[in-house]
Length: 148
Image (cartoon, rainbow, N blue to C red; front, top):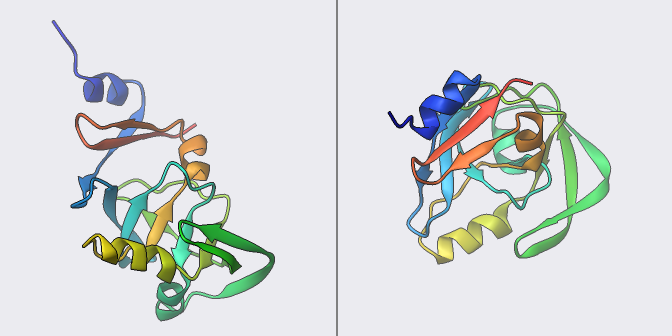
């Protein structure tokens, strides 16, 4: 009897996060940051998890400027901030964040808008994937995270 990948991974202690696809094929998930709803882009090319600075300020979360600049698709030399006290949830999964960063994501959202995609509030990066031995199953549009 064949066992599905989801069943196999869940039996091995992975927790499943269901993903959706944007009109251009990006994977995303609805989440919450301190109970505020956020759209989360799954980005295997992003080294760190980064939230939109404007949304962080809307949520009233304190930030501390860091002595470094960040970059991303279409943008560079952007001030990076550390978010204090942000708890991210993806359904019932709370990803381990060594640090939650924030920066101006308007360049990312402008690029998405040009493709007809709604803006994102947070980019989930490799830091979370590493911390949870993540597996992305494109066949079932699922992200599997393990508490390790």
